[in-house]
Image 1 (cartoon, rainbow, N blue to C red):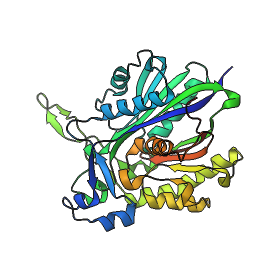
Image 2: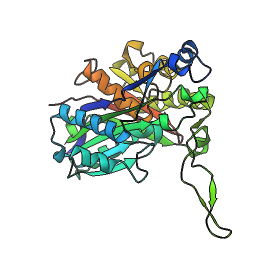
Image 3: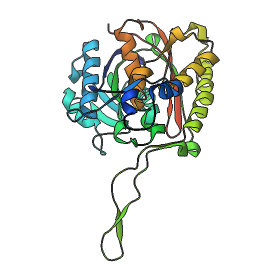
Image 4: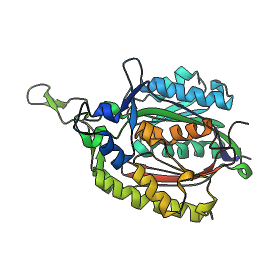
Length: 333
């Protein structure tokens, strides 16, 4: 009898193009100090002509499979958490094909910056109920395609990237995903949007059709910030209480990398020292669904995160949606 799930490997991939704050100031009226003081971001990666979101997702997935020492054919499930697929019908099937995961079902999951956490929980349910044994969860986004590069309020925030984790079914006594909570409030969804364009073209006679395409990202930064610093501590506190876990017992706090001030505010709320807060926001900006697995893989690769470490994580963003998970990093056996 199974009933548990364990996180055994991670992987990541980022574009080769790096765009610094000073370089962005050549495009819009801003500067390095203005951006760093408000966001904590120093640079971000941007997909170039010879790269693609699908390609980055494949690279991140391959890295996780290598760490796990798994053959791609052993996968039962591939979930790609993205809001910016290369194909609106879904990019996960293409990633599945490129990986050679011929036995796996694959689908996209869209929840913007909460996407990876939502995908992690979704995949875990298939493993816990015994219908599947191995899953690959990839978080990847290319928001550089959808920002207005003449709007200094938003273009400085986002970057592109991909991160992945490998999950495996295990016995309940070896459970690695100790608890989770997911929430959505569509009433506040107007704070952060990527709307379909409203251009209509003539069809026949007096009939028209809506042209495909999307408008640039629209965001009320102040409202999103207030939402995050209020809701993230509350959902984490509720999760820790329900699992009888004290903040001091955490090895790491791993939050969606949106703004350094948000990370600092949440850590202060729980009296968690900065040395336990994982952050690579300065180098990559907000990579949406990729931020959590990208940061996790970096910390695993450099040895900060070790087998058995207890991690509290929270994702939050468009929808508005947010969630939290408490898990142990197992690592490859």
